[in-house]
Image 1 (spheres, helix red, strand yellow):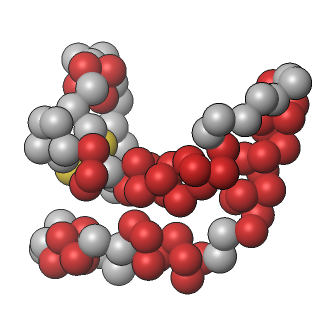
Image 2 (image 1 turned 180 degrees about the horizontal axis):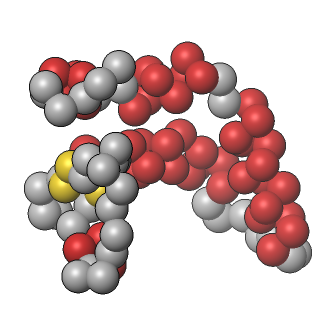
Length: 90
């Protein structure tokens, strides 16, 4: 699992299952965070709009997610470093 360096990802009481490996991004590197890349995909359409309710925001996000194919997600988030290390089991 790729994580930023948020303190909540490093809590001492956090229990990490044996089949999960945490890979921390370097500090101050949002361009390496797959979630940031996905957000950039819809940010222009989302920004500078007035939403009447949280339900409208939820509808927008739901529609974007449903319209995004697996292939598109892989092309946006498919960093070579994710698949180049021996820790990954594919």
